[in-house]
Image (tube, rainbow over all chains, first blue to last red; front, side, top):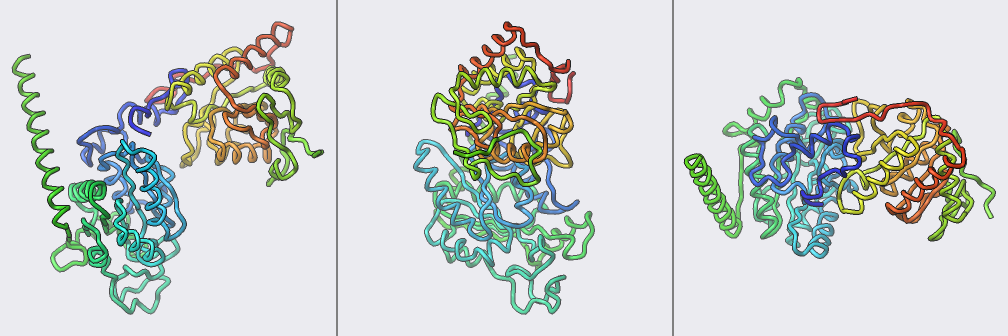
Length: 304
Length: 210
């Protein structure tokens, strides 16, 4: 799949449902500077979602799908959980894996794509909840990092098993009492970003999804570093408003509070020297490109 | 040889897969008609007469012919449109396999996870699947056979479908046109379309045009 192929056959285009016609006409496939700011002015790559009203995961999905640098050549690998309810609705290729083996599948997929399409950039992105990433799939997650597999792992951290009613997960904070964990958690939240760093990830970021600009930047960094250097990891706080006793409107406030100074989700980034070099180079290139585009635009206006 | 016949349903809530009942796929140059292996030419005539005898003949084009992922897909789409016009038959698309929430608009689309809704709503009695990926077609064909009385035809680009009431294999634009030729020939022989008069809907980015 590539952006040239996201067109309809002429013979049958006029019977296609409107949402697909809109997708072809206004989605940002192939746009170099696509990002969260396109939301509202272009067709999003998520049609609908079956998450709860006000769920921060749905916000995270929208920002991520809007910010992928190469959606037409990206493949998501998902796992069991709330995220798996969303994947059937997105207009990006995706695979649902068994609970926990998402990084193993992504490893094989990335290697196969590199062989099958040696002259194309194909991004693989794992997107799973904390249960799949940290508890059930920690072995596969870490082994892929040890092996320096070139793909991005995103963990939607809602600090429990939300989809099944609120069981304790490794990323739950110490002492938290959930519906299905009535005695409270006895040990600390697993420090996966630190583990990721020690396991060989080159770019790691932990943040909430309250600020779309930050999510976009972290995602783009993670994908570009994974493409060129090695594994990357994003941990995004997407609280389950139902399981922590909040209302639909309160997800954003919860994220903002948790990222205040001293909070659990103050934005943290770890960037290896190699990755930093790449990020700086890409930023310089982008700056030059934007400057050239601006100059060309000015020249065009003047000559007109 | 199996005594089982792949007839239009409703067969049961969970119909057996035709393969498990001994139905085999046709070899190249052949088709299957209700499970019986027959020459492809016989299949064209059978399908043409079946379509012409239907009150609501419908073609369900799938993603492989709705999306222009290669030139052959575009040619198939043109051939499908010509066939639909020749019959005449309704065209109802299966644009992809995403579930439709909160509910499918059964009048203008079909989804493999609940194809029976579209068939019930439109009272479709003969349909043809074309350009639907194998696994989704198998799923949909079995649901249709299980819960509806619709006769299913698969114009399959691979090895055919046991779960369709009749199936072609190795579909090409030329084979679709051959089916159209068979329709025209049957009409010349005096077979009249029994289709209830209808107007094919047209869609735009903002919705239903007509």
